[in-house]
Length: 606
Image 1: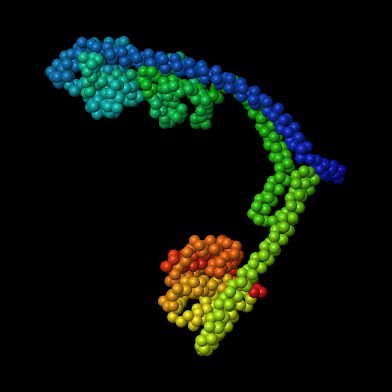
Image 2: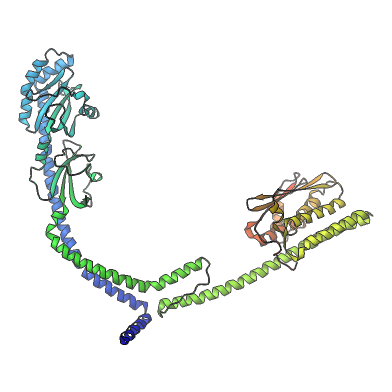
């Protein structure tokens, strides 16, 4: 047992060391061996196809001859009807029909007996003939007419309206004569002064016993497993005496039309068995089709023994092929599948995956290179993230530091103006407001502060400016009734520079009547802040051009600073839009994500 284990372990180790090229070669040897063993299968199918083709051609020839024989007999039926309409007795009867004279009905009935008997004598297929006219029905007195059933109330009459030139009706029970036997009917309109004037209410009905049609179809003799049927274009049986199907012809979609070639596949399944099916359309009854059907099992019965032996061989070969192919493909492709799964996980940003294998072949070497590549990628990503974060922090600090001195210079100038004018009470209030603004603006060194603090910062600024420019403007603030809005984190000092632009530039040409309105609301998961004034307006295109330049003008610097800071914080998640026309005021809209960050966890050190 130990020796076997050692041998197996040695073979296993050797298998792990061979190259993938050698394993593929081994797989090809196995597949070729299996292909050669399956040669018997192809031999059998070749023989079966040859027998099937020959049987199909022979059956098609028989079907064509049967259709020709049927057309010949149906043509004789039509000629018998024409002979009847050319007779002197028929002409006299039609004269009375045309004049609606019923006095000579029995005279015409007597005179037509010879003509009717001659028609049945000339064509033995004809069971009986009925001439239907408005003055009465004419038929052979050897037949008993069913007086309760009128032709004008029958289905044959309804169908005659759709086919005024005459038609062949499929097999049905004869309701016009007693006996209730199954017949096939030929219905045609009566002709007056043939062939010029058809009479719409005169019909000639020729009944052919269904059994005679069946005998005609099998006149060539029955063969084992082969049957012939007569059906119409809808797939219904014309004669049902030997109809083996439960409903319509099962291969109705395959019925041939004029000029259509044979179907490529001649074997069709029905009720668990396969049959060869042939078709031939009738040239006389245009809607009739002669079909031959022969059992494929009986046709190939001589090859049954060969088939059984071949099937046994095929079964054994298939089982062997299945087993070996499963084992081989699993062994060959398992490392590739594993490496593919790892790569798909990397596509989903799972960068901690590693490839492990006991093999030493080419695929294993690719997997180990994959591990080294992933290690280098993770190190590179970590380094890039660190540098990008440091760069972003530094840029935010620089922008905030630039904003605060700009505001401070303007505010100190305002306080200085008040002190020069001796308005010490206003100076005290402004200094106190400035102190509170510094406290809110510094915010403990954090860059994100609650919206409530940012609005307080803006109110203190407006209070200072209203002291400096008395009666210049009014300031209103509206916050949507939502307790969550005031606690939303926003970057500090984003509103005051916008209001400062309104005061310094929007109201530069007036001394009173200015209004500044600030509205805060929620739009889905975004915080929307709208700031509007009624100043002299802006040239929006020029302002946008100024903000796009690397060194924006003094007028557009504050707006450029705010937009850039929002991009650094939120990327494309935040928006800033400026609108307005000269002389119609200006409006600035800010959209800030409500979940953009946690208050108190911003960047410190500013």
